Length: 288
Image (cartoon, rainbow, N blue to C red; front, side, top):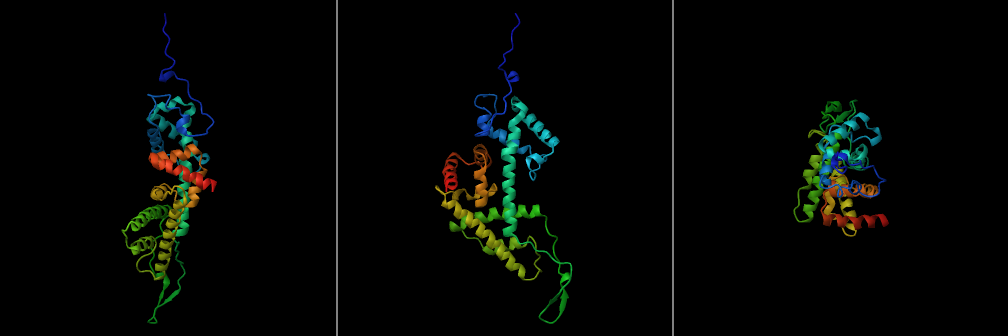
C-alpha cells in the first residue's frame, strides 16, 4: 500500500495569504502557530533591515523603487530566511518595507531637514569682489578670503544629527550636575563651514546655531515632560531614531498600531516597562 506524505510538513504547508492588516506584523505572520520552524520575530526584523543596505533607496517612496531591485531584495532575504517562503509572494518582506522601513526613513529625513533649516545657517560667498576696509586704511579684495568648499547636504545632515544627539546627552549630564563648556559646541558647529581666518560675524551665526540647537532640544524635552507618564528619560533614544520634535512625535502617532509597535520594540529596543510607559503618553497626546 502506497503511503501518503504528511501534508503538514514544512515543505508541503499551504502558503499563508496576506490578510487585511489591523495590528502587528508579528501577529499576522502567525509565528506562534508555526513553531518550532519559525525563527524569532526580532531576528526576522534584523535580517529585513540588514538586507536593505546597498539595494533599497531610502530617499525614495516605495512606489518609486526599481522593481528589479525589489526582487533582488526579496531574494536576498529569502536566501537568509527560507522560512518566509511559506507566505504567498513573501508578503511580510514587502509589508516591512511599506509600513516600517520607508516611514522610518521619512521621519529621519524630516528631522534632518528641520535641523538643516533651524540649526546651521548656510553661508555663501559671492564671486564678485567687494573691498573690505581695514582700520589702517588699507583695502583688500574680499575675493582673496579663502573659503573651504561647502560640504554636501548629506554630510552636513549626518554631522548635525550626531551633534544633536551629543548635545542632548550633554544637557542631561548638565542637569545631573556635570556641566561641559558651552563654547566647545559653538566651535564645532561653526567649523562645518568656516575657516578660523574668516571675519568675526561668523561667531554670531555660530552662536545662533548653538542657541537653535539648545532651544529645539529643550522644547522637545519639555514636551516629553508634559505627557503622563513623563517620557523625558526616553529623550535620547527618541532623538537617535529620528523622533526629535513634536512634529516627528505626531508623525509617529500617525503610523499604524502594528508598525508603531515594531518601531518602539524592535528598532528602538524599548524594554517592557518603557513600552508600557509610552502607550499612555501616546493616548494623552492623541486625545489632547
